[in-house]
Image 1 (cartoon, rainbow, N blue to C red):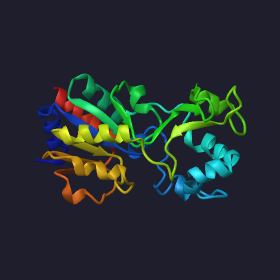
Image 2 (cartoon, rainbow, N blue to C red):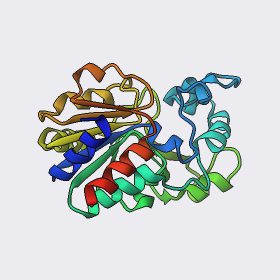
Image 3 (cartoon, rainbow, N blue to C red):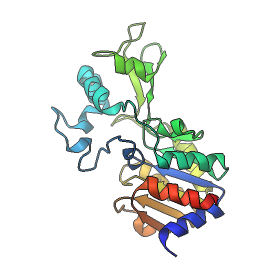
Image 4 (cartoon, rainbow, N blue to C red):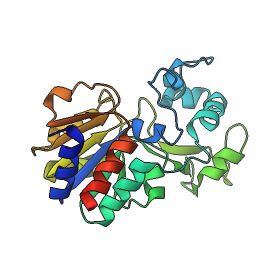
Length: 243
């Protein structure tokens, strides 16, 4: 049985699916992947992107941090693609229990997904580091220099920077969903960033599916590997499973 047909069949048979995704899910919405050849890591700045997006850099050079952040991290006008929409429909049909994502763009929620665990936070949420007041993404986008709260405190995006730990409550919920899933679909991630990549180790079932354009370190452990566009692959599989 070819991989696409196997995927369609497994989706049709399963009713406790969990999806774990990375940057490749959003590249088809026009959001650049950090590690691809045309991604942020291969462009030239005064500092490497991984240094700019560190907690130390944010504290020491906040104006430079926000100049980069506004330009590269806020994807104005990005829309959910076929993968986002298929996952939202799978959840509404009662098959998909949760989306676990390393992305910070909010596109899963925009597509209609409700149970979304954001391991690395979201650009859509921002808060004052002094008083805790909440701000939407517009406050960051429309401000200049270092964005300030009405109380005078600095506003920080609710995203996990390098050197910062993941939210343990979100991580524990992700482990719980994955450990109970009858099918785990991993898509659009290189599976090289830890601790997020280690979540796959908690899956105990027999339907581990990897969908990615390039090979990953876990291909040999997967029950099914499908190479190509995640939007096309997941979209077609779901359309077939519904019929």
